[in-house]
Image 1 (cartoon, rainbow, N blue to C red):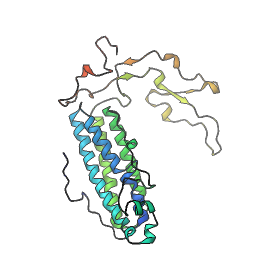
Image 2 (image 1 turned 90 degrees about the horizontal axis):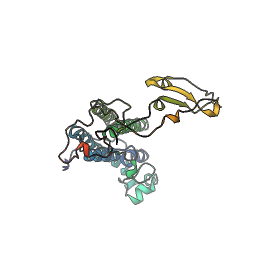
Image 3 (image 1 turned 135 degrees about the vertical axis):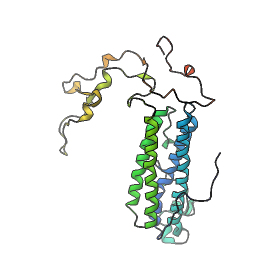
Image 4 (image 1 turned 90 degrees about the vertical axis):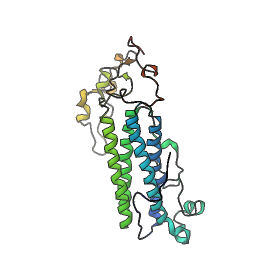
Length: 281
């Protein structure tokens, strides 16, 4: 159940409307990294999360706050687009917004492309969804930084600073929710990766480039038991594909399956992909 309170989470003030900047702000209303996408992603993930009512509450808390953020962004956009309703020159800044939308809000991004559910990352696997959400908050934070760089209006900057800061808060909450599951960082799903093959870093970009780039070495090749291998094309051994021999059940899931479930959740032994007593899927 939702209940709307007629008060913004953050009071928006715009001293000098800027219709072109208002158009930029549409990116955070109906864009891929915007507040509507975040609200829908977290909320639907929460509704799907029947196996963990604690983290379901986390998802629904933040999904609901994102709707409040959408309301703030909408108020900010309306204030910046206001001149479109009365000023021909301002209206010409974006005919789509002016003529089709009357100089108001609509579910478009800054280029006029319609919002789409393709923006949403929903897998139904809780730890994967939480990782997606951490990345989504990081992308939104960067968008707000860039928006702040393109306005001098103090009230607008303060509003965007508020929204940008809350992205970090949400990153912390999602990260804590993920870490509290106590899963190894590279343990995903229910099938284990092929030993040996999982530890090979494929050196697939070789030679010297025109911009001074060359083969480099770094911890991404040797950390977490990784070791580099070269392609057969350049005389290397290539990946150990001969190690692949069927599917391997028994991935380490930490506490992921131990959480308090909803009354509608299926029993663990009823789930597709759960190992049976003889270790086979």
